[in-house]
Length: 194
Image (tube, rainbow, N blue to C red; front, side, top):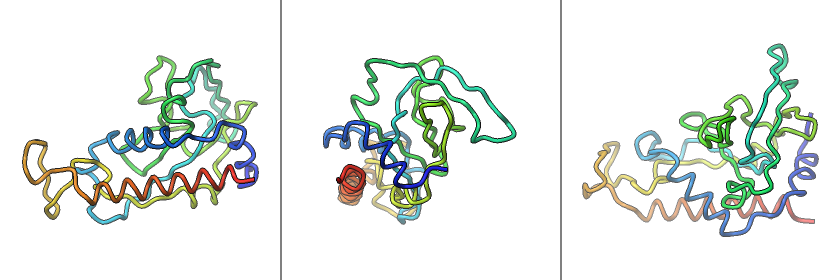
């Protein structure tokens, strides 16, 4: 079982995310789904943000052990140039719905490769270890529909047409994005502090 110090030791071996990578990641998350349709105006949807050394790596094989998921063995392609990590560092996010593990599958598709990996880190032996509860707790950020730029100015109604005047980039969106940026920078500092 991995504890917080073990997680920190593993993650601190990867390069520290640069501010521009955090901004790229936030933009990707905000546009990854039509959040304005599916999340509440209230900040009540927990999103979990973690640094994962395997983020963006191409999954090439999985040997499943259906009796014990902790004994599944995952193998990743060793790619000298990982475009995901270049743009977003090693950030990943998880939500209860509407998201998938953002990691390429066998065909290089970056949209779906394994909800089965979830909140786990694959170690050097290919074993997926669950994220420590403390990492999940620290990484949790409550979200609202204002995550998406097409946010509502009125109650619970929404429209699919972005040309309609009641859907706009709002101050609430900017405020939420700024709070998320501070959250990710704080997590980064916690992990990389000596």
